[in-house]
Amino acid sequence: MQPNQELPANWLSKISRFLNSIGFVILFFLMMLTVADVVLRKIFNKGILGTLEISEFMMVAIVFFSLAEGELEDRNVSVDLLVKKLSLKSRVIIDALVKLLGFILYCFIAIAVFGYAGLMKSSGEVSLDLWLPRYPIIYIVAVALILFSVVLLFRLIIAIKEVRRLWIR
Image 1 (tube, rainbow, N blue to C red):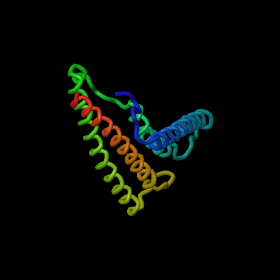
Image 2: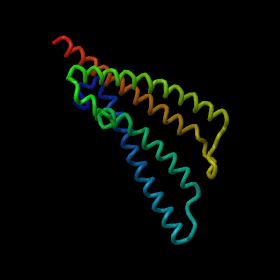
Image 3: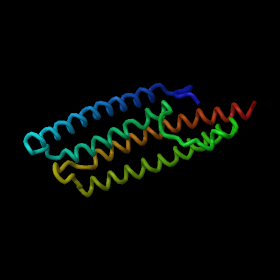
Image 4: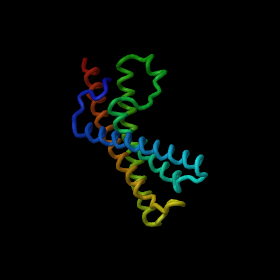
């Protein structure tokens, strides 16, 4: 299946691309923070306080901001060693089933992450060095997972249309 094939919502592509672009910007700042920390440790024998925590937060944002765009462009990892040997109809049916299971799974994960973020907010948990609250980044992850789930839903719709097209033939 071609990436972005008959995507029903252009807004979904724009939001995904925007979040992915934010991820690239965060990656740049993560790189700059790491370089600055290493240089300061080598020159002055004193690094930047909280670099590890900030790096963790940034890496989480980078990963989850890129999920939806990766799925839209069909760049997420897939293992299709055995599926490649099947007939076209079988491959399309398996693709639709995988999209359905992925959609259901990531909906449950997003709901669980929202619950976890609420738990973290009510407990008042903060990072060790900078005392930054952890719940905002967890809410960001939950929102990114919802967007990813919506992308999976649209990809599922496309896969079902492909199954119907091949089945009617």
